[in-house]
Length: 73
Image 1 (tube, rainbow, N blue to C red):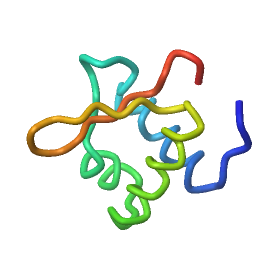
Image 2 (image 1 turned 120 degrees about the horizontal axis):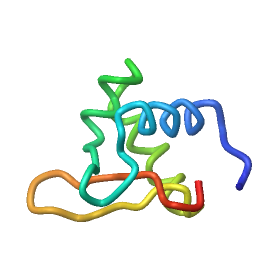
Image 3 (image 1 turned 135 degrees about the horizontal axis):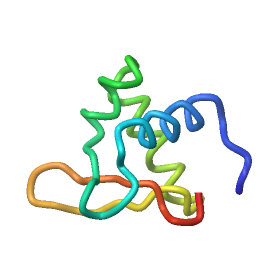
Image 4 (image 1 turned 180 degrees about the vertical axis):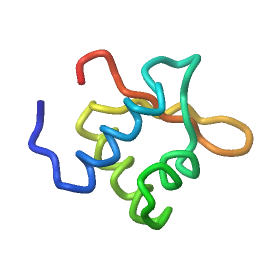
């Protein structure tokens, strides 16, 4: 797996704890920010970076995008 920053590691761990491990169980950035107790902008930046690294999958939806941990993480 690619080297992760501390905030990326925190986001990834929080997503696993929230159960965001498949498309059916995806979580929004708001859900993850509440779990991490960090600003949503910081979480969004980490999610973009994680999705570029292939660790997290992003699913565009009508309101808020959903995110889940990819099978390779």
